[in-house]
Length: 57
Image 1 (cartoon, rainbow, N blue to C red):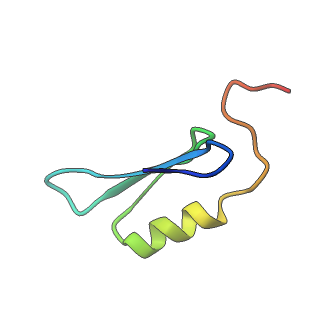
Image 2 (image 1 turned 90 degrees about the vertical axis):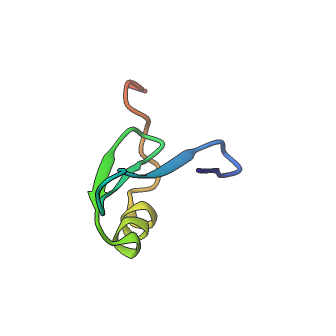
């Protein structure tokens, strides 16, 4: 887990007993993948400027 200068947190967890990675963006969106490259590509391509879940402004 790492935080960018703005405090946004992106998290990737390995699901024990599987080959599956579970990623969570700072906005709350989630993604699963077996390939670490696919997971990081999703994280890096995730839309910029979106708001965290629950933020309506």
